[in-house]
Length: 565
Image (cartoon, one colour):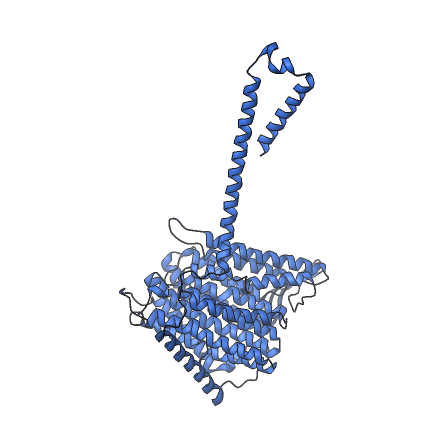
């Protein structure tokens, strides 16, 4: 066995993992001040790495690469480290011990996963992200309900089991542990794709996202929105870029979320539908499969972490101050929470407005569809871009901050939350105003001129007409009626354990009734036999020895049946 040491003898992401464990031991006051330190150390540690493979272990003829930074892993690793820094600042307002440890370990494991050069290392980090993120869903209080966390954990573990099973089948088919491009030519790779599909929230597999993310605390939702699904996008980009199946899957993700998101009353669930919608953009780009399309998917993952995170941070502050994010219970918070309103407005503009990162990444995806001569995909992506601005951005801004005012008096977001939102907004503006900084970080060289007069005017007109359409829909009451519980896959996910529990209850009741009936039958037979005794007994007087043996066999069978039922 051979081993090549790592720079500083520590794989990427481990400053966050070790820092999360250490900070959990500090008192609350020290914990709040030291929270950004592990993320800063992780950024410095990443700076120490050059591109290439580090920590290579050769064992049993297979090569394990504990750390690999190449053109695809590099932007995701830096994105996750920056997200960890921002989320740490956001968490400073309420640095609960479990959330601090779980959030930082979760972020560190995600960085370790994107830097894993082999499938076994990927699996280990894959499962660590599942376990750490589950801790973010464990509620506080005297009588906590662990149902959401348990269901989330089951889904995440299922993804890990599929990944491990796929790796084993892949090796049996003559493959290696190297994590590079995979094809759907064998069952092992199909299992691996299924594992990635669960965490990428493919249609019918997305129930865990819709249920779990809005159930977490304000900081927990921000952490969850940044890592798991983007890790899945990285895994798809690494293993399955160019797989034609991803195009229709991405199209369905874009379309069905617009319908459900418009009807959802909980604004955090609305943003979750918006998150799945934008994942559809990335999945479709990966399905197109050209170098430009792959780079566009990576660029959109970066910008989406920023503007989606900013929106989740804003609604997290609203939840902290008001206790709810239901549109029917909010309104008029713009005056009482001006900083939060301003940052949420900038997050909405960051989705597709010029000077923001979302405009730079979505334009790149549209250019990739145009380069592939797929006019149908171009129009679908344009519809999705308009729809997400309408469904997630304008809806959140109006119903939370601009709608009819409620009677409650609330304060603005705490300082730590505002600082995190400011830093995220700065990232959105820097990458939007200087798009070449974003394009130079992508895995494939991108030569694309973003700011042309025709393109800027076209986008501004599209967004302006979308805003006008939203205002008219409000005035004429054309928006779909919002409901508290939009029926989705997560309802089935919650119903299955309940149905199984009720089935077990029914079986237990029937077992008890059967045991009682057998016991009554045995008692009746015993009473009949005990009526006469001695030589005048019924059995002695009328039955032969063979009959007695038959009765003994019947009694023994009844006892065994009563014992085992």
